[in-house]
Amino acid sequence: MGKIAFERPLIQKIQAGLPSKYGMVRRPEPIEDIEGISIESLLKEYGSPLFILSEKVLRKTYKEAYRAFSSRYPKVQFAWSYKTNYLNAVCKIFHQEGSWAEVVSGFEYEKALTNGVSGSKIIFNGPFKSREDLKKAIENDSLIHIDHFDELYELLNLARDLEKRPKVAIRVNMDTGIYPQWDRFGFNYENGEAWDALNRIMISKEIDLLGLHTHIGTYIMTVQAYEKAALKLADLAIGLQRKYKHKIKYIDMGGGFASKNTLKGAYYPGSDTTPSFDDFAEAIVSALMKSEFKPDHLPLLILETGRALVDDAGWLAGTVVANKRLADGRRATIIDAGVNLLFTSFWYEHDIRPAKHLSEHTEDTTIYGPLCMNIDVIRDHIQFPLLKKGDPYVVRRVGAYNNTQWLQFIMPRPPVILIDTQGGTHIIRDKETLETLNHCEHLPEHLT
Amino acid sequence: MKLKKNIAISETGFVFDPTTGDSYTLNSVGMEILSLLKEGLSREAISTKILEKYDVEKGVLERYLYDFLGQLKQYQLIEEDDEN
Ligand SMILES: Cc1ncc(COP(=O)(O)O)c(C=O)c1O
Image (cartoon, rainbow over all chains, first blue to last red; front, side, top):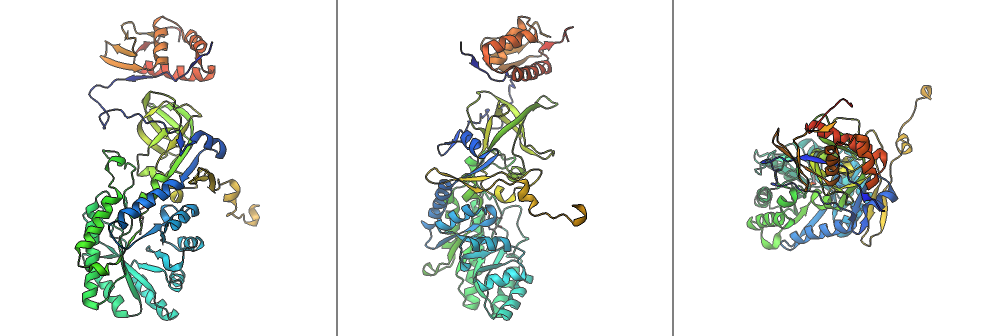
């Protein structure tokens, strides 16, 4: 006689009058496959844990974002924000779709060049660019976005030394009604600092001012903030035309569109509250159209969208390591990926699911990573099905910032695979090993 | 180790403790273990019964059974007896 499938015995207290914050218990439905490929089979083939990226989702999301803007505005250009995910395969896909590169360090700049992006299609942002970095950027005709006066003077110096005119924009920070106001990057709009910088550039006559840039923050949920920002940049551009008869070529609105992940402490899930690309595009484009730009002289609109383009294209799959009960009786589940790999779990209530159908029942669970560190918590409180040691799980929407901010802490990092548009799988970053890491180390003679 | 006498078990997976007024839900394996406890079976006897019926290794079951009984104790649904 066949035996009945076993499920861990479970008892739960019914708490009348204490519904969850969504009014009912949401049972996380299992996700068993990604684009038709079973997650368990991927874990078997490539090991656990495993990052999985989808080329199809990357391309589809890019096309959606591009269409939202290009259907409203005649000249649109995306520049892929390298720091969001600079795995070369990801960058190449966005470049193939037509994206320029947006970089914030000499390292990222080199990466973009190596990925075949021509110098004039690289936007160089950030508060720290070395003299060597700036020199290279000038020689390659890259777009240098000036962050502070020291950088402006360095550029004036280099322009004389190299006898070449740098192509620049200034980064502007401003009050857009959102908190916190990012005032540490660029020149302030309200206190006149931005005009100060523009005046010095125009008077110097040694630099080509091509654009105006802002990046008002990250994970922005209010489209009105973008409308305000676009109006302020347009105001500066119109002022330049009046005062110097100088027409800028582009307005760069930066990144910052929220992805569909749920922020910690948010009342509703991000998938219900995040504005669409159309919402953001409408706010930005209507502001530019409302401004005094002449319809036949509209500047190019550049977007440096990061997380909203890539978050949905990434998954982290892995295996349950153990279950235990905490002192207060709550269930704790330990999984094989922690904050070392999911840096974004400091911001997000990550959407973690079983990767196969295991149980109808859920229990209030804390999900811990594998690190021997108190901070290693993936979810504090989640109604989660009863997974056993060895069962597979998957975390959705991990494409942004994790493959760049992950830590080689306590253990080496796992491989990353890409599922191509035909369903083929490719390793795009090898699993790290002891050799990978020892490769950078040297022992002084007396310690060998 | 015994189930407290006045605990009410419904066939649909609900348990009511009249002393505290608390209600509980159980999954089917949990329900089965509770019923066996009510019949007065020992931990070993329960373990044997479940192993006969379900597809589970002894070591795995022992762990979950131990954990489950710990929870029952925490909810004060079972009383210790001299056996322990
Ligand atoms: C200058 C700049 N552009 C673009 C981005 C991408 O931002 P996001 O991922 O929020 O779209 C960032 C990220 O902080 C940034 O600093």
